[in-house]
Each structure stands twice: as structure tokens, then as C-alpha cells.
Length: 114
Length: 107
Image (cartoon, rainbow over all chains, first blue to last red; front, top):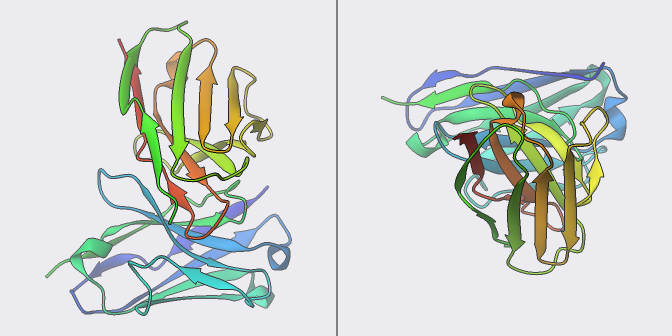
């Protein structure tokens, strides 16, 4: 069974940093590109970032470019999102999504507030 | 960036109704379109990929069609568990973009 389990969310002040993790199981993690998608409270879905299976290709949404860094460790079956210079508008549930968008994690809530 | 629109933004329907949701891309995306269902407090669930292919385990009452810029999601006979918000997403080119969603509620 494919499982994606996010962790690392929480309350952080504006300008602060947070690192999200996603633990993958039930499939060959190293064979799939991975995405982060977020959803602000009461709002729609927003794609955030993509990393290819070998980390050779990475994309970011303009809204996070230069502040967020996606990475992965295929030996640990894990995906990461390092979030720096956080803003109020980054408040959202962050989902880890397998490439192809066929499997989603349960999400982790990031709240940016003073 | 490719912009995605959906119509209607919300609709009220009865159990047993046939429901159609439309998604439009600002430029051609071939058939690189997916549909998702999301219930309150839950992660989105994948329904359809490649515009018309059902993901494993998705009931056949869901169907998708379209190519290029215009796409539809149809639920043939609405059931209580289908009341949710539905999103389309293009994956033709990055940044992948979602439609704003269509909320389907009970009439």
C-alpha cells in the first residue's frame, strides 16, 4: 500500500524557517518524481514544487522561488521542503504528492503568525 | 503560465442527478489533465488522469472527456458520498496549475 506521511509543520513567526518531511513507503520511491502542493485555509490547491526521481530536475512556483528548497534522499525514501523567509501567505496545509498526482499524503499544517 | 478555469463554481444537485463540471485551459494542453475530489478536512483524491482515464478503484460513474483546452467531468448518478469539491489540474507544463474548484452540495 502506497503511503506518504508528512511531518514538520507547526507555528512559526514571519521571517522564520521550517523544514517539512515526507516519508514514503509501499512503492519504489527512487523511481518517481515528487511534488509539494499546498492549500491555504478555505482556499484552493496550489502546486509548490517538483523534484525528479534523481533530483536532476527541480521546479518551483514563483510564489516560493528563492525561499523554498525541495530535496530528497532516496536511500531514506524521504522528501523534504526547506522553507525560509516565511510569510503570512505561506500559511497552508502542505501535501506530499507522488508524481502523476495519483497518491497524496494527509498533509501537515504550517501556520505563519506573530 | 497556463490558467485553469472551472464552471460552475458551485452547484446544488439531488441524489441520482447527472452532474457535469467544465474545466478550461488558457492554452492547449493536449490531454494532460487530471481531476480530483476533496472532502472537508481530507486530502484530495485522484479520480482521472490523461483527461479520461480512471485511476484504479475509482467507480465508473465518474467519467472525463476533452482535449486541447476544454474538458468535462461527469458523474452519472450522484450519490451521497459524491458531495465534495472537485478540482482539475493541468500537467502539460510547469508550473502545474489547478482550477479554482467546483463545490457540489445537496439540493
